[in-house]
Image (cartoon, rainbow, N blue to C red; front, side, top):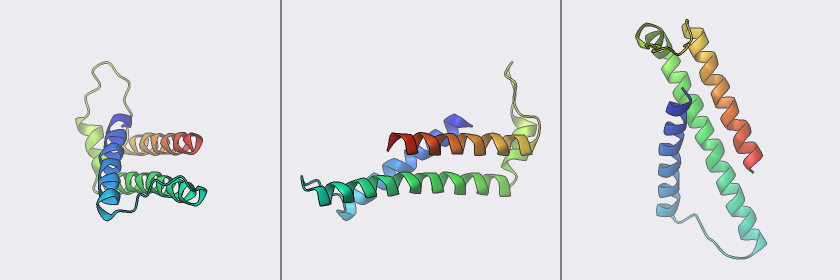
Length: 106
């Protein structure tokens, strides 16, 4: 779950940076006003990434993805969740850990 969410976050983050450069929103000048604006753009991008991950988790749960995981995920010696609710709670816990990591980073 962690690897999938981190992978989705990386793909979205690269798309977000490409889009912001394409639009021309990123100015890197040495004035404090511009530094604060850049910080807000970075924080907005991180929160947007977290919102995108929350949306992915919501859609995956809504379309029965976690129920699919219960029936199709093979453990290969790893203790995996046994119910779809357990899978959902794991995904939400990873999402919150990413959130806290991003808060600490800023």
